[in-house]
Length: 386
Length: 236
Ligand SMILES: Nc1ncnc2c1ncn2[C@@H]1O[C@H](COP(=O)(O)OP(=O)(O)O)[C@@H](O)[C@H]1O
Ligand SMILES: [Mg+2]
Image (tube, rainbow over all chains, first blue to last red; front, side, top):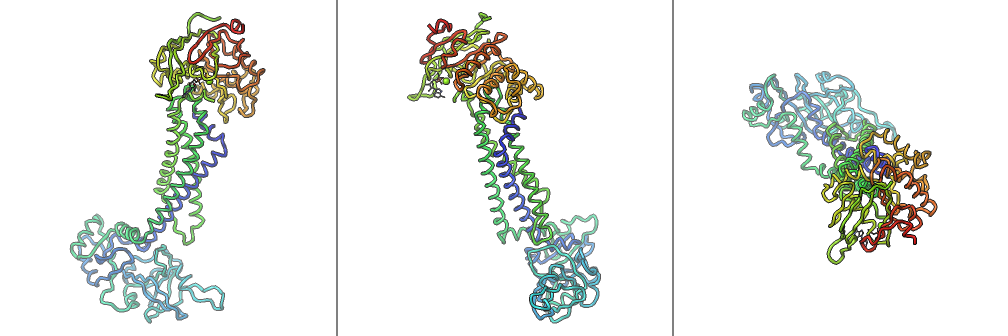
């Protein structure tokens, strides 16, 4: 009888393709929008994941997210280093500074100052030069997008292409010369400014002088020390805030979720996709069932039980669901893939695939339920009505 | 050929549709018997309760009162699941509008009652094809209903009604969608093929031209069986 169910479904090509189209569309919208949403949310904490080495981030208690800088005094570093269970602790400077380009224009850049001794937290993908080259005098590393874009040298003749910044080029920060020794790749973040890495002490000379300069302290726990315990200890001993990396990521993401309206904007798009999907598919599936009602009644009269008809309808729903989901997710992946090297934020982890599979199942179940109700309530005696 | 065991025995059978003022009393005390191996026709004016009666006989519909025994079963005592199983095993149906599933081939349509009884598909379709050969359209086994004429479709429907060897076949106006000649041929076919092995046929019809094919004719009026006659008596 399952064969009969399949033939009933596949026999009506127009209806079948309509159903598949509806589900494809629904799962495409669901998956694509969610993936872009996830991608965007990843950008909120790109700077944290790029600074890969630290288990624990220590900061002023009032800091709400990664770009919210509330400097601490340098002595905080020493206090943290003195706490048992700390394997190592290094300073991190992070701030927006104004750079003066060769043509005299100003451009703000997101400056990271790395521990002079270890360069811990530095860029992990170098396109030109090496991280260690930061030890040379006036050395800075800039990110590739910045080097090709906002920091690029203006075209020599009007209408020409700007020349990207390369190793050996220089710029000026706070009247001090900075020489590019490397080009790196960084994760995209919400900050559109170019990223510039240098050493901690050089960064503080680039910055207008302030009493407190220390943005974050990056901490590594000794082997066998629970990070949560160490965070608690740091908090208690220093009065500073200490987060495990994941917690800081969550906090940063939470901040953007709460204050930027991104989730609600994407949420409505995803919800709309879902609702439209339910509407199209439920309507198509229901009318498919209605058209076949006479045959379901015939089957019922001929002794097919409700349970059997139920399974037939579920199989039909499952088949269109799986096919539509497959094509939809395939298209979404293709979309993500074809925009892979662009500014498009797109992340499609397995959890999301599972989630949209669940959503498509819900759509199908809702549509099938409508039909099922109709078929279960069907009086078999209607078969004799003309 | 006609044995004396009543296959159907109804007495004081009543059925009312709806309630209160809009209630319609479709059956008002049916007395009826049908025997193994006979072809019984139910005739009467439109609205007299013929369709209601065969719906009750085939356990598609519950009567309100009276007694109805079909194939040694008291229909009132059967649960819904038992009725479903009873129909699957023991009843064949032929409908006025054929009710063939349009996306299945003729053979697959005929195989449906076997599939409902969980026969594997290959075996079911093979049996169905044999049955189509028996009703004279073996060459149409692979065709869709839309590729067949009305008479051919009704042959497919007849093959479907008997492929699982039911003991009772009910037909509601099986010829009313067909021209006269085709209708007669279908009736001949029903007599020759369906009426075997002690099977009973109950055929509801308007069409007096097919009356001669009946063993007995039950005349109904206003929810009652008013007379039961042989065709020869009736035509007088
Ligand atoms: N489902 C129903 N609801 C209400 N009234 C019905 C229903 N089915 C049949 N009737 C009424 O019951 C009577 C008998 O109908 P039916 O058995 O179909 O007669 P026949 O088949 O002889 O034309 C008619 O008056 C008809 O209008
Ligand atoms: Mg009728």
